Image (cartoon, rainbow, N blue to C red; front, side):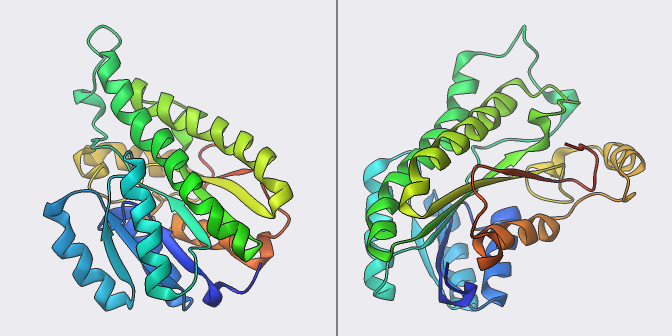
Length: 254
């Protein structure tokens, strides 16, 4: 893999929160950035951010294969080079509020379907769209964003955990198929992050409890997780594929 500054990087769901922190981290390394948002309401903001970071903003719903194909085409025309790193960060609308979550008695399949379509179908669409460019370059990196709740569902968000668990399994199977093409596929699983739009609904006492239970005695930030994403995109991870790293200050150890 070439150095980070040579990469064209797509971060899905990068108009705010964790995705924006990841995009900024790649920017500091000199990467060319493709920022993505799904809806028109967030597009003006995404354009402003892309301008500040010297990248481009493209509105596309990752669950729509045609929109994703168009995104990759626009990016390659803009940079005269295919996207070489894909970060699947897009998240269906979700709030981490254990008191407000749906229990097994009230949750419906539609809730699962909403999370699965963005997490798994979205990753499938970006991967399929990325493959021709990866093959042209002779290399590629796919980095999926998961959750430590798959290993330790201290709050049983049934739909969210199921989708992230499926994404982890998909990461393993993608790595097995794409390895011979010099394409790596890994997953970074975050803990509860302080603070994103999704975790803004989390009561403050929950952050305190997590900090007290974590060996580092603090809650993980989006910038902490972004560092692990950069590692998987870097030359230091050339021989690493099909792996998960959990970034939560040691709360979940494996």
